[in-house]
Length: 113
Length: 113
Image (cartoon, rainbow over all chains, first blue to last red; front, top):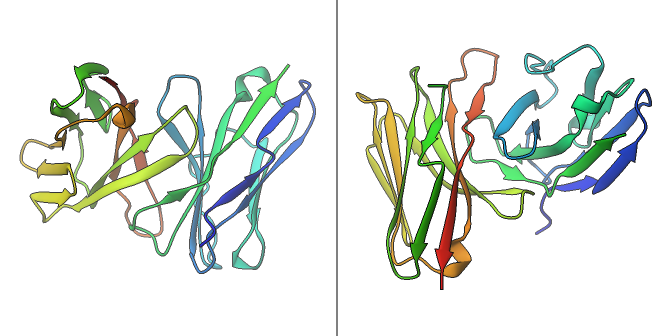
């Protein structure tokens, strides 16, 4: 079946612009996660959605970052007024429930110039 | 050390040899997961081991967990060139409504043909 998809695969933006990154999880998965990975580093947790519950935003690095999940399915991560340190690969994952193995999308490589 | 730290940082072996990677963590966990990442993009889940389990197998993979030492190991037997990738351990220390899966910085495994 279809895996987790993300778009765009690559995004180059100018400093100060807003960007939106999209994640389409595996159908039926109630849990959705966003991470970011800087070059040569591990994954940094950003935000977690479980069904229609309020998301766990504890990993968002600043108030320039926000995310929503519409209808318990597709999610959008928005970064406002992008900075160069926001450059990274943004990875989305989904799982049937929290605590189960996660299925990752291919990621969006964001470059802020 | 940080929560979920792999050792060694890099490992180079010959095809057919076994590869062992270790993960140490600091706080009590719900489960520990191992993932593989090729070419810096999406991660692939390998094995999830729960805190009350001591060993799990999946094909050529063997994972052990020692909660008293707060450590885990991933053994890949009879390695192949296709096993070349970065390997990450991730510790689930979620509690209540908060979700927390912390990834280490990974071990870069190179299997030489």
